[in-house]
Length: 87
Image (cartoon, rainbow, N blue to C red; front, side):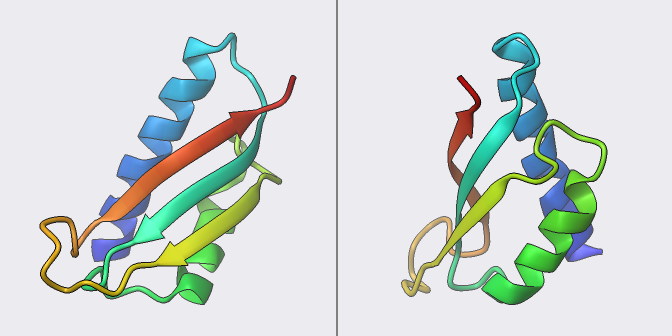
């Protein structure tokens, strides 16, 4: 359930960015996984592929950075770093 709510929040943000730019196709998504997010980059990638089906991010390249600082205020979060849209 934890992953579901984090992914749902992430995709709300990605969809909003796409809508703001004339429903642009998402080509790259960069995220940072907090040290205490309790999800590995591989597991996150699997969830990303499933959640992206039927969205502007379907087929987008995913770049994941695993953060190490457990004391960071956002250590439990999945942070949307950037989104690139097709030209």
